[in-house]
Every structure is written in structure tokens, then in C-alpha cells.
Image 1 (cartoon, rainbow, N blue to C red):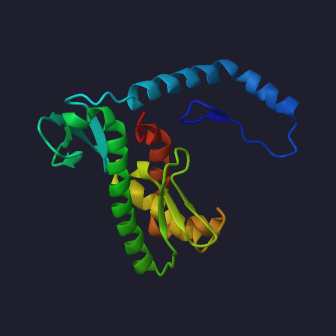
Image 2: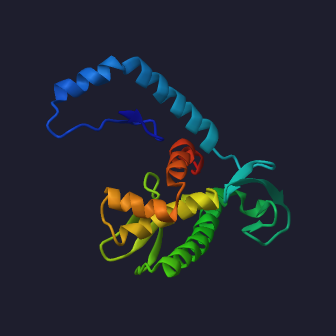
Amino acid sequence: MYINDDAVLIVRAPFSTSEEIINKVVSKYKDRLQKTQKEVQLRNLKSNKKEFVNGERFLYLGNYYNLKLVDNREILLDFKDDFLLSKKYLSYAKNIFIYWYKERAYEKISQRVKWYAQKNGFEYNKINITNAQKRWGSCSHQGNLSFSWRLIMAPLSIIDSVVVHELVHLEVKNHSKVFWNKVGSLDPKYKEHKDWLKNNGHLLRMK
């Protein structure tokens, strides 16, 4: 039982558990859960709301870079140590950033998937970049790998960890001990990386 990054209460229990028992447990921790929920809501409000003003910071590959609004530039968005955005397109800033992130995500994630696949003998079909907010990656039965564009804001080690996770699913479709042993052989710090996403995933969003 926990509050997720969207401030929603998640309860996991055996299928046979009655609704009455679940409600009793939730009621027992009601005050603590409500407190945590409010904290997450406030955290999300502060960290995700973008105003697209000079000096505002944006994440890219785990680092923050300042936004600079420029005059007389026929560019949508450029990246040279800082993000450069033409004032001409300021009203479309959010969509422009998301498009830029998606393009960079496809480039970088495709590169990392190819590297790990060739090195370890994985065979996949194609790579998709999605708009998923709650699922960082997925692997279909057809061998298609999907990744959220938001990952491009995370450090490369985190991207690699998600890539490894999904590549291993090409061979092991569940989360059994065999699966985690294989993941651990390719990503020895996968538990740390998993915790990083759990604790910082809310930062990899744009509202």
C-alpha cells in the first residue's frame, strides 16, 4: 500500500482478500496516507509546472540546463550548453520541448538498445517512443520495445537500466528470479536505479 507519483493510493493484496479487510487497513493508516498524498501533490505542483521564462531549468540526461529566450531567431528550439527558444514561438513552448525530447529520446534510446542487444545477443523487432507517464518501458510478444520519452530527462545510467530491463523481457516474460538474475548480470546496480526512478520519477514530467 503506497501513494504513487500521481498522488494516487495503490493497494496490492491477494485476490482472496475481502474488501472489508482492505478498508480496515486503509482506515488504520488514513492520516499518514493523506499526509503523504498532500506532500506528493505539493511536490508535483512545484516540480512540474513550467513557465518557460529566462533562467528556468530543464532536465536533459540527468542534468539541468537554463532556458534562454532569444530574439530574431528562426529556430524552434536549440541546445548549446543551454536551451535556446525563440520568443516568436513562446506560445508553443511546451509542445516544442516535448517534440524535442521525443526526438532526442528516440536517438539515444535506440543507440543504447542496439549496443546492449549486439553485445548480449538480444533480438528485437522495433523501438517505439511513447507518451506513457506511469510506465517507463514495455516489451511486446512481437519483440517491440516501447519507452517513455520522459526517460531522456534521466541520467544515462537510468536509461540503460530500463533498456536492460526490457531487453531481458525478450527472453524472460515474467519477473521471476531467473529474470532478475539476468538483469543483475547486465545491470548490477539495478535496485539503485529502480529506487532512483521511484524517488525521482516525478521530476521527469512536464505540465
